[in-house]
Image 1: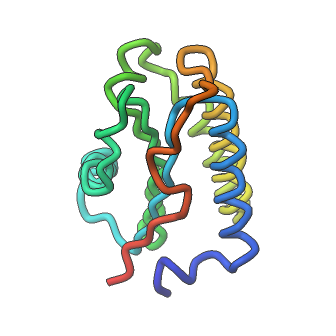
Image 2: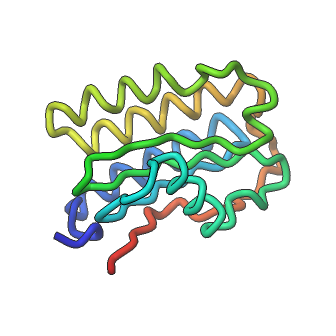
Length: 146
């Protein structure tokens, strides 16, 4: 199955709506990337995708990537340098565990949506939404369909 077919249209909308809702709470920028396989270490692959999507070019370096490899069942959340500079090392752990608990029940769209909303709330403390905030990155899911 191609990654772009992993979710139906309703589920894709649920995820992109979660991104939009989360970004109402924070100036942070959230992206979701889904691909078929991840032959490398999941964090290394997520970092490669992070750069490929130019997520490191946000003004406050506060981008967040939710990365999912569907065939390998690998998942990672990766925050940019601006976030990592002001948050503890275990900042993403609770969110990641919540997402994975949904995945274990086959609830992929629900897991991602819940995690994305949690990320928006968590980022609000250090990166509150600004009145003049510009949406620097697309809210759409990116897919690597080979």
